[in-house]
Figure 1: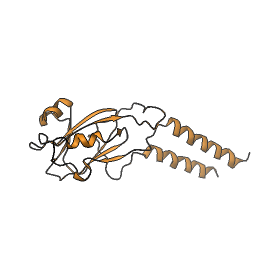
Figure 2: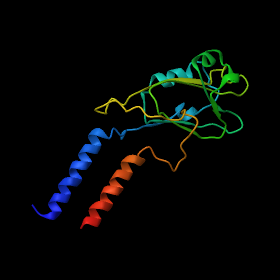
Figure 3: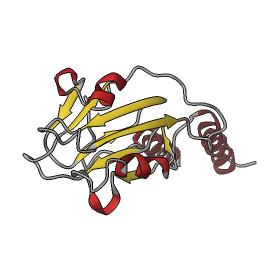
Figure 4: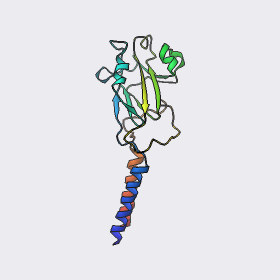
Length: 177
């Protein structure tokens, strides 16, 4: 086996190992909250709960709240504040649209609009984030900020570690030849 074939086999082995053990979410989904309606006072009190019940949210997915800045907000709250629409105990609030929220942990998340009586009018969303069942292993726990503390901008990507691996591997491969 020549030098080229040896390095090619090493690159293939590293790639396969990374795909199996790297546990990267390569099938992430970007959800537009409320679809065409966006994040607005809904026509029905159950509109957002109905919308959420038709989705499957997984770690690595991204929620996108489209709304008019200055008219609505996206507030992350605990379940009790969600149930009562208590806007005084928000964990964090985003007031600039669009709000992009990466789903980083398994569990329940609760969002409300903190403006006026919008939440009482049904502008609130509760979701359940699960692990990605397409992965062979459950996601490794990692310390991460709250979902609203580091919203993604349009230039960021949830594939960065995966892409960095391939970039580095390709560079090593090219330098060896």
